[in-house]
Length: 334
Image 1 (cartoon, rainbow, N blue to C red):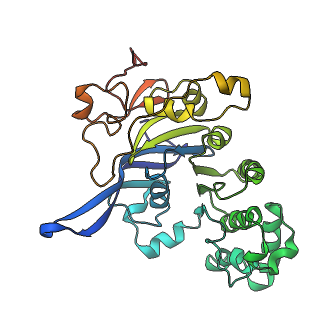
Image 2 (cartoon, rainbow, N blue to C red; image 1 turned 30 degrees about the horizontal axis):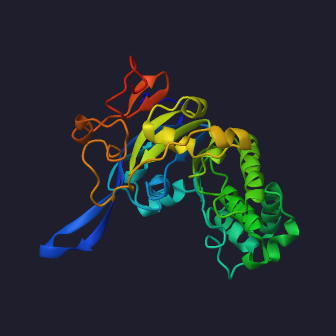
């Protein structure tokens, strides 16, 4: 990883999130490491994509960065301050700078509150607007996300899914944050609406100089919006690099398999291309494989892969991978 610089918005080192599973036989308890010693930097003004299969720890990592859940170990540096050491009261003031867009726009909104009241909550909590100016501020936020200001008096059930997500985005923008975690923001929406939301996020980023952590299993969406991409597998980052590099020349067999699953719009090409189908199921996070966690499904695994834990190293300029079978001299597995 590159050293922390003035262009770094968020710097994560050794971040780990563990969940206890309760008591087991003979008094033993087990834990699952949803996030296991993740280290990465998110640069100011960029869209950082985080991809991987369901259950790999993407959403847990995003919530830990926003301190919606407490990490078990590691550091989260934001503008030089370690967020993991802050008390709940001290973290409250930091939340003005860090907001989140949730996956389910309906579940994230209080059904008993008008959307205007929901959007106005951050303004009131951070003392950014008095009651007289609240309605005008909420109206401007609604218009910024493509909704009519007059809709502020309506309730969430009166909106479509895409409109509710726009309300969720408006609420995230209310506190005027610099960093936003977008956790699967389009997965619950119709395909016809997804592109509109992605374009909205890109426009808002340009207008407000926002930094995004964009979490998704939709590789097409990530390719469209992300500047850099990290690929996650069973709680660990296995590949990281510029989006063009990762999509154009993936290093890890896992990344290659994920990208091969993206459908191609041309039916002739789609019929001829070969998809990489991984064998076996994803191992349990409760008892993950030793060594490289992907070795049980990797077609290129050798005996050492089950004993040696690969580190994320720079294979090409700004392109990192965690595999003992590749290096800067031999970036492709033969």
